[in-house]
Length: 423
Ligand code: UD1
Image 1 (tube, rainbow, N blue to C red):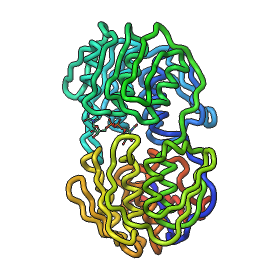
Image 2 (image 1 turned 135 degrees about the vertical axis):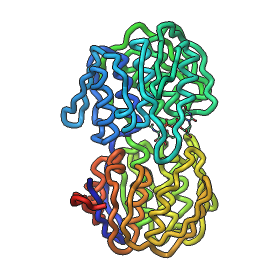
Image 3 (image 1 turned 120 degrees about the vertical axis):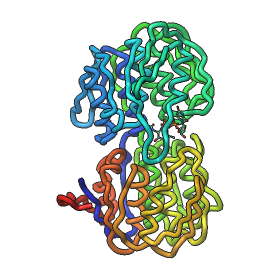
């Protein structure tokens, strides 16, 4: 186990490049099962969540190896092993793999992924969607048994525009007879990226990025090289760190439209932003202004995965803000830790009232989930004095080389091994 030691209060300065998007790479890795030929995923991030997905792939008989930053995956033979809870417990989004296994093998067995720190994470939309494609599904003692021997295209009307369910169904439709139409599909950029990847393998997906996606099943897909999109949440995290700690940074390798939901809000709290091609420069002087209301919602609205980091910046705003979390029912757990740094946040159900304080003070805190952990880092960068952030393993699920990048921006952050028995 490791911890971050952060000496805060230094404005950030310099340039940072964003990593490849974890949430694009994960479904793309799962989609490699759709072909028996080798696939190279360029600049695949080295992250705990990616490792967990690769463990599942290897459990199914696929090979997956990094060659520098390129990930080489080959799913020549896919074994229909039960994906047990040891594997699904490490990665809630492991359920995304059902669609690609079913499309390729017509059978799949996976343990229920269960809930997680930020909410229940139900999978009813995935299950009912697959049933619309004539998959027979039985749940026995937490293992989901799927029989797709009669699978064929169909129309799936999602009650909610779930990212994972949309991705699962796109993969499910790729190799089956007929057309699969997903109505009320999620519109996140990661969906568009997955569609482009499937098409790069010879698939026929259209409409991604809109609310109706059509997948025409093909007989076979081939291998390819593919570079997934940049990580819009990492980009947003760096920009929000400037909002909290002050300074001026340039975030490179961004798709500016992907981060509009965040940058619009950053402007409202006083961050100055300029865009040059794929770089965004963010600068901030003084305390952030409060926000009347910040609500998370599906793309292109403000993303739930940025809510904790943004709330950390609002914790030092010059007034009170209201933050409403519409996606996950339990995503304010980190505010208990922020309170140890002097933040004044009251939470009731899915609403947080954030009374800005002039400054936060360094404290010993613990991350319990990925983005909540990022929020603690943002707050520690802004705080006066030293903070110790435990639970770095959660942050490592989604941020590659975080302390290296922040150090390059002038932050005083060190990764230190915890001694036996510490916390
Ligand atoms: C993905 C992202 C995650 C992000 C989330 C919302 C990945 C690997 N993860 O997660 O970082 O926070 O989108 O942008 O890409 N729901 C149901 N039933 C279902 C599926 C979802 O009720 O069958 C609910 C969830 O509980 C949640 C909401 O729908 O309240 C959004 O979930 P969803 O869009 O599916 O998120 P994920 O794909 O799990």
